[in-house]
Length: 302
Image (tube, rainbow, N blue to C red):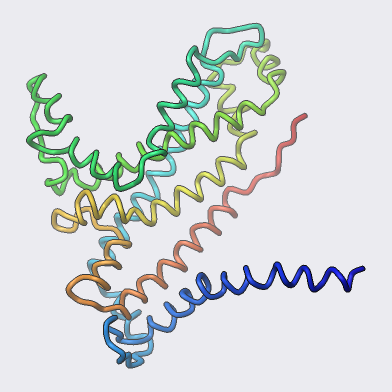
């Protein structure tokens, strides 16, 4: 019986593994190889340069500036997004008037969830262009509201002081809705008896969120942090379409730096591959560090 199943298993298993190796693993391995050459991308010549690209990378001020911006995104975006997601999800799940169990949600919860989730149905390109118009210094909705109340109207995306933070705000806005729905679904699975018991002891909703909800949702929060951390280490599409890294590289990120190095006027595919290899290990390190530092004993409930 086992001998008869083996050919069937190999028939269905080998083709997907072969496709995965060709189209996923092979490009990664090629990037490692290209990073040790001076390949310009559009020629057949690619002379090996050893670790020269990585030595150049260590002294590249533009790369370090982009990494600094990505580090800020990594520190701010996951924390703010998860914090807002937990707050809105808890308000929708147990923010209404006290019912028999004391954990009723607000009225119109499904409508609110739909509104929060709406940015997820839009492509990142649409979100970037939409907010670029909102931030427009002349015809933008934001400056129009500021003029109406007699306040100053900055050139948001054209000012080095604000451009990066404007992109960061859009990144948070576009992600919060998904985690509101995700955390809300996880909260629905928590038995209401637990909340009823702590409410009878006089606990507030803030205490319930901090002492009950967050510990029981810790696995979900950990996964959310990893996904948001990876997104923070990217940010390429939003930055390219909204600011293209400007003004004066104030909103530059490592993804855009790699793109400009390879497809811009320099055409240094070998050096860009070295940046990609460095980011591969950095992203992997962030994910592993997050898993290790956020590890807790699993909390079971029935």
